[in-house]
Amino acid sequence: MRKLLIIFTAIISSSIGFSQQEPKSFTLQEAIDFALENNRTAMNASRDIEAAKQQKWETTATGLPQLNANIDYQNFLKQQVSLLPASAFDPFGGIRQLEDYYDLDALQTQELPAAPEGFIPVTFGTKQTVNATATLSQLIFDGSYLVGLQSAKVFLDISKNAKTKTDLEVRKSVINAYGNVLLAKESVGILESNIAVLEKNLYETQKIYENGLGEEESVEQLQITLSSVKSNLNNTKRLQKLAYQMLNITLGLDVYDAIEITDDLETLTNANMSMALLNADTNAQNTIDYQIAENDKISKELLVKLEKSKALPNLSAFLRGGYNGNSNSFTFLNSDQQWFGSALVGVSLNIPIFSSGMRSAATQRAKINLEKAETDLIETEQRLQLEIESAKSNYQFAIEDYQNKKDNLALAERIEQKNETKFFEGIGSSFELRQAQTQLYTAQQELLQAMLDVINSKAELETVLNTITSQY
Image 1 (cartoon, one colour):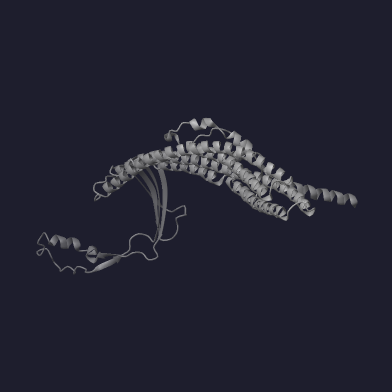
Image 2: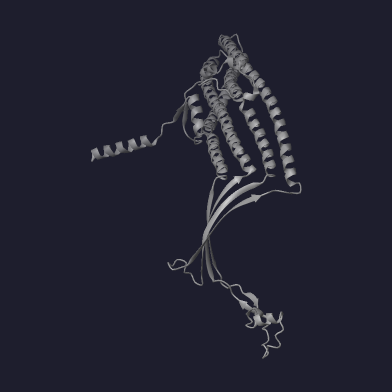
């Protein structure tokens, strides 16, 4: 019995172990690669490309042979009645017609009966009919079809450019979200370290005060500082949780999935300082945003062509064949049902002649939209040029600011250490110590933010330039 209990316990333990999934672990580059495959926006952008490919074939197929079949079944619940003149059934009608041309009085031996008057109701055809036809059609010439083929190709290019733009934005979003997690994680570590130092200082100050060698205000000043840092720690932990959830959404994971990040903020900051990027090509025409605006202009040009093509004739040919069956009852599935076949071939030519100015107005409207697209393209180029210069400036400032904040932190640490020494030696006040501590904590957070700014500003510049300069 004991052996069975041990085996059962082992099975349950192993089942629980397998059911608990290990948290996914990501470096920044692994997170970017994962998001490009699993981010929901990126996935939909890939689907848009596939949809554009299908639309391109759909447009192409409209100019290829089309075969359609049609089966019509009719059952007259009450057949239509036609009225025929009764005189049409006059047996002496022929003789009466001869009297109109010849004098037959000498030959007439007896008087002819009077001609029937009125109408006779007649029903034509059978109560039930079946018509089965098949039509093979082929477009020979249509100007709008040729424009449609060009438009389908442009639409595919637009979808591909949109996918490139989406991937760039997803990459930037992952870098930002990953950096926010690192910022929160580093902040928690620093705050916890500060709390440990403050608790140690408070304990020593409390003992000094209890021995009558210090003032109560010194204890209270440290208590205020400790309370403030603990409050910041609690808030930072909440922000850290939100940062992880935002990263999950950006990666395409469930918001509550457990993940781990393996990079650290300082290493990524050093990896993202590239002065060569500041000398990168600033030609706005090489950016994806300019290409998207150019696609819009091309599509407007095709719309002008489309409106003009509507004034051209279109020509198509067709071949149609079918069978017809008739019966007063449903006997169409019987082997002895009689069927009558028919076949024809023909062409159809449609020539637009007069539209009361409708086609001309549509063409002019398309031309106006084209002019707007051309203006937007110029505006986009100028705006992108400014965005590139601004992104370069921000990136250069972020690098310079990081170096400055790094130096400031070193100074703040020395100042805080001096004031702490002076305080415990009795030659410095608790107020001065608290000021030095507050200055140190501010410098710590500013350095972390400066690190994040370097990473994010580089990602922004790479996104604007449509240039990926490094792998993490």
